[in-house]
Length: 72
Image (tube, rainbow, N blue to C red; front, side, top):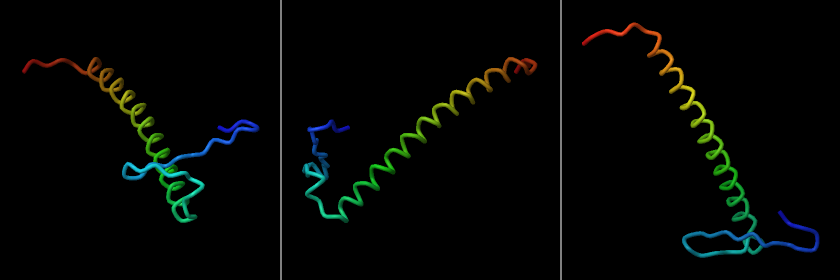
C-alpha cells in the first residue's frame, strides 16, 4: 500500500529476472494482473478446502462415535 508522497514500485519476477511493473508493456501488465488474481483465488480456495476438511474430519469422528462397534 502506498503512502502519500511515497510511491513504491511493484516488481515482477519472471524466470529469475525482476522487472518494474511500470516498465512492462500493457499486455504484460494485464497478464501479471490476471496471474495475481488467479493466485488470490487459489489461496482462497485452499483456505476454504482446509475449513471443509476440518469439518469433514469432525463429522467423521462424530459418526464413528455414534455407530455401534463391531468386532472383526
